[in-house]
Amino acid sequence: MIRYLVDSTAVWQLLREPTLNDAWGEDVDLRVIGSCAPQRTEFRRSARNLVHYGQMAEMFADLYPDVPLSKNMWGWIESAQFQLAQAGGAIRALSTVDLMVCATAAHHGLIVLHDDNDFVTAAAILPDVLHRNVRDIPA
Image (cartoon, rainbow, N blue to C red; front, side, top):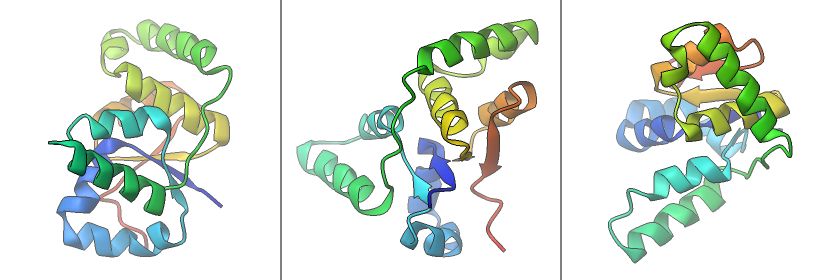
């Protein structure tokens, strides 16, 4: 059963830091960390060429099960932006992809796994967004 929705910042840290990769390895192996299409699209933008793109696509297929987007995602995002605007400058903190990740996680009751303070901001203002920094390793 999927518990987390991964953000690109967390994937990069898991790839770059062996300690984090080891710490989260069991969760990855158990496939409790999922990904969604907007996040994968954002991540693959960094591909250097077609071969690298293919490797990235294969990594996501092998390690992170797909979490489908909500049909009401855009309605959730509009409501979230309104709440962020009410809080002041927080509306500028989250990118469109960040909002899509939050909407998807909230819809499925998942925790956003990240290494990005924008998700801390989102969780502080949006009550249905849960988050965990990838550096907060499992016990």
